Length: 312
Image (tube, rainbow, N blue to C red; front, side):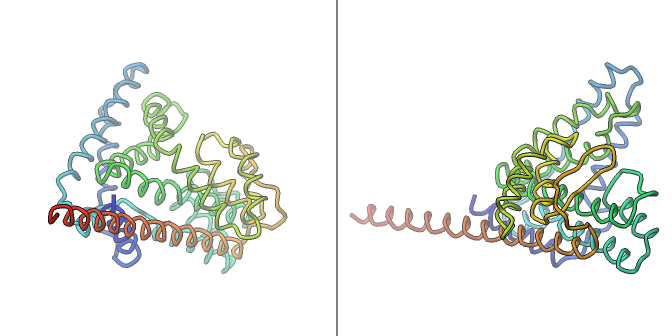
């Protein structure tokens, strides 16, 4: 666990400092190719399509876990692979680009960037406030999906657990839609992703509550009241926590309203949301540091005691 904590720290550092891998080398891009190939081979019969989706998901998760299991156990080697499966810097940059476009009063570009990087909904008719709210929602949800959950599964099950999680999450991003094309093909992938994110989503909400200075009681109330309003059993937890911490309302028209605060979503609130996300990352880093040092000290004490017993 100490080695994984150290590798997690190094992975976050690499994510902050190193450039993104080119697409031809990026593991998530290759996961996407695997998923697209599965759709090409998928049968048309609904029942068989359901089974095919489950089989292709299981094969993808097993293959990705098996490949990374061959990576040497050295912390830096593990960190470099783990870093490619994290996405905090890319997430923050994407939200920042939408924020910059709104500051420049370029609503068309803000809508385009929001749709391109962050959400799957139609953004053509969104107001500036709607765009800001959607970006904040995506930041909160993906803080869980792209940072906390990958680190959680890495600590629990090493690189194989992280790779399997990322494959499942990518399946859900590409197949997890309730429409004619993916209703059966992606059903198992969506349920698998729900299961793998049960703990991380709630952990993310807890971390946002912890750093919501001056708004903790209100944040807890909003989370407890509104977390079940989203279609996903998990997305509502970090999004409601973000709404409570910012004392705002995050609304997806005809779907949900999270929070009841009076602060209007705008570029300034987006900046506050990004700062909250950074504080969560700092808290995670602190936890990894403490875990690594504590484990190292425990092993050092055990080693000294064993040496003393041997001499006696």
